[in-house]
Length: 405
Image (cartoon, rainbow, N blue to C red; front, side, top):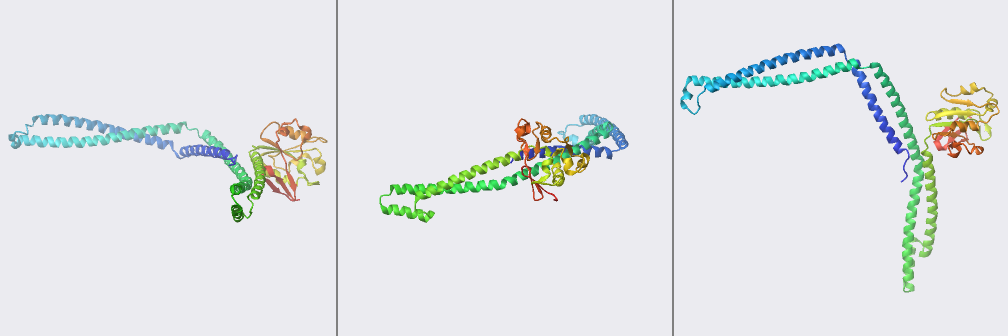
């Protein structure tokens, strides 16, 4: 299976985009919280919670004291109650009163303990709310809105750039799949045909073995008949020869297809960030001078994905009848345009601008034969183009741009 070289880049870019999105959303949430929060309201809420907390704390102390008093009284009352095993005590009015008082005190103790438990729960809740409110006040007081807005802007810019990066990688990933799809299909078809030819050859060899082992002419005729009926050829050896030829041809086809797929994969895997355009080279359609017609369309198209530098020979001034500034204003201000000195060829300038950066490529049909020592030539960082029928074609970059002739 041929692996798309952009799969890993795409997954990494998506992960980075998700990370930036999370950071940006978090920062915006913090800013929205600050802008929607009023410090005066926070302080007022803090005072309100403190007042409630003091009230419930006092109630807790009072209930604890009341429970303690009840427990002491209950203990004294219980000690005054006679044995329940003595029947006399059941009919004694004083003992009856003591037992009723004991029950009342137990009920009161239980009710007050429930109230105390509820009050203590309220106190715990208020303590937690007070802590949270104090933390929120401290957070608000120490919050740097200007720094957060600046950070949010930076994250927004980074996220926007990352989205564009994801888009570019997705497009290159799709272009690779589109470019490789017909090759993969041809490889699959050729491999299937080879498998079928090998299977027929195997059966033919088995039939040929039967011929060799036949005892008489009848058995041999029977083998020939089976071969004819099954494969349309009566001779197993002839069939083997035909299939061997087919298999050899298919092997050659598969080798070519795999080599083609390798070239497509290698070119697709190029990490192109910057392009140095040989300007004069792109001003001709065949032998016809077309001026800047193709470049006016091509340069903005390339600038969407790459940093573009446009270099012209000094002869372009006379050819166009324009000054350097006239040529520059033809293109967007972001595009670096350089016209070398009069009577000087731009070749060496183009190669030196490409330098040793692995991500910088040259777009030119010049082979720069006399500059074999330059890194761009040695590393084959030169991309060819075609200008034909009002179209600029850069196959290695998947570019097709139409222009008015």
